[in-house]
Length: 81
Image (cartoon, rainbow, N blue to C red; front, side, top):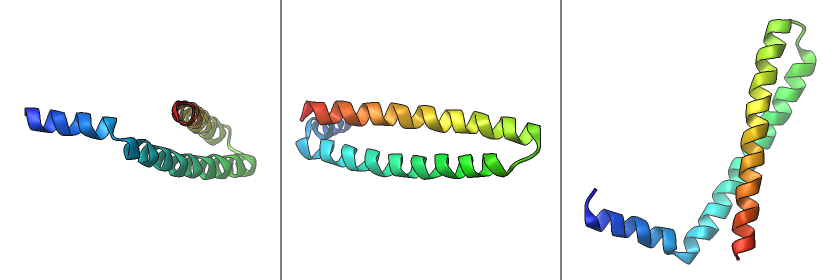
């Protein structure tokens, strides 16, 4: 990686407007994850096959973990302001 690209990366990391962009990106990602989580819950109620239910439960766990991690990151960003 060239020095100029490293400096650009550093400048973007230190840019105050960048945190605003990070917050907005996190909010949209969290909204999408919440929709996905809700759709998985609805599908889970409709499924009868145990194998499919187990697979969907695992996917639901992953989405929950991702959302939890995203909410934590958003809270940390809000605390920094």
